[in-house]
Image (cartoon, rainbow, N blue to C red; front, side):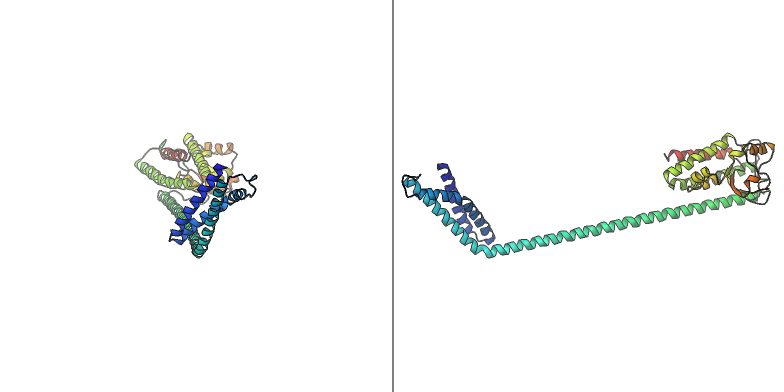
Length: 347
């Protein structure tokens, strides 16, 4: 009992000191906050104080737990606590308007902070939307630039093909698709520079052909690099195979004549951006074959190869082929190296 009485005495004394300090504070908001703490502390201790008061007020001396001196101390403590609680309540009433105004100010400040947060969030979302729009515009511009580059590259390749055609005409060769005998004078069984005499004129023609084909091949490989990776790699692998076949057997007609409607060739090379251009850069020329046209190669050996492959001139009526009429082994070897390099960097 003595310990509980001491704790309650200390609480009441602390509350009285806090009450005096709060009343002396000129800041109404701080005063109100201190008074609220005092009132809350006394309210929490009120049940214990009431029990002590009841026991100390017992009129029957036999039933009373306290002696006269202790009973007087308990009743005095209870009276001090009640007086302190009443004084805190009266002081709180005086501070009520100020506390209400402070609460309203806090609420207004909270509303202003919430509005500012919402405005900041709206600004952030607007900035994100602007960023997305900017990114989309940049992507669209990049795509348009890539399309323009591809169109320019195709135009350059077409110009190179036209220049090659003009060069052939100047050397007295028949243009592509010229009449029933359009391949006579163009098909050469022997590769350039092998069994034929290497004259100055032929050497210059071979050098010009190599330079022209090298430039066209670089443009075609650029287009292939921009194509979808799997399709680009498949096309490059087939181009390596075609060049290896011709380099291995440069006189074989079957490796120098490609049927354009062949599904494997059409899907994996001709349908890929830059694939047809690469074949043209290697020296293949587009030729249309039809029933009854003259032979594309000279000599019985070539005719025998056609028979062995099951192809007849009549079976080629109205079909488009890619034909390698002339083989420049040096130039083709250089082209093969360039294609292999592009394939290696496509892995």
